[in-house]
Image (cartoon, rainbow, N blue to C red; front, side):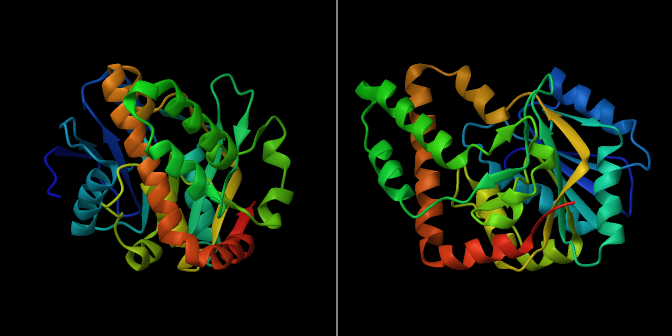
Length: 287
């Protein structure tokens, strides 16, 4: 799929570039994010990818940002949503870990909800029985839209919502027990070497490209760390925000696409789940 949006570049850095998606470069949340990043030291090269077209897709837009980055690649690459706020030099703390640990390829911060009550560190790996729920959801007609929303709720609660707890920052047991991966989005920083190895996002997905990319990182033997001292506040969601402004029919189509993406994740990785669990257990760190 060809990219139909626009790319805006701002700032210069040979060390860190950041790819950020937005439906509108002028919307308030995006402007506030860009102002926040402008104030960071050392400076960051911003690659803002704007796409408000009807056939918008996350992986297509992310790949447009990646293609721009590859023209003049930096030592490190960050992905970030514009609905986050960085706390206490959090980006520099992520880069510092990569600088000081040759064996770590990817770092992510602690994700905090607005108000700071809950934090999230890890995300469950989709289990093998996921196919049953996603298949049921994918065949529900629009006349039973509330049932579709109910099945989506089951899927997110059972499989995709990360453990949220007030003491989550101090819980290292989850990181070594298997069945979990580091939460890489809405913010993560990667070494150029691992980006070169894993490559671009899979454009067959409409949603779920972040989960897919994380799985591919693990299967490529990437060592991934969640950094306790780096904290971000995640106060919104681009995709959820778009859904809440849609008509019932548009919401129905949106959720069907989401369930189909989850179904694709299952089918893509069902033969390597045991290996994925093993890699995640070996290569997930909380430091």
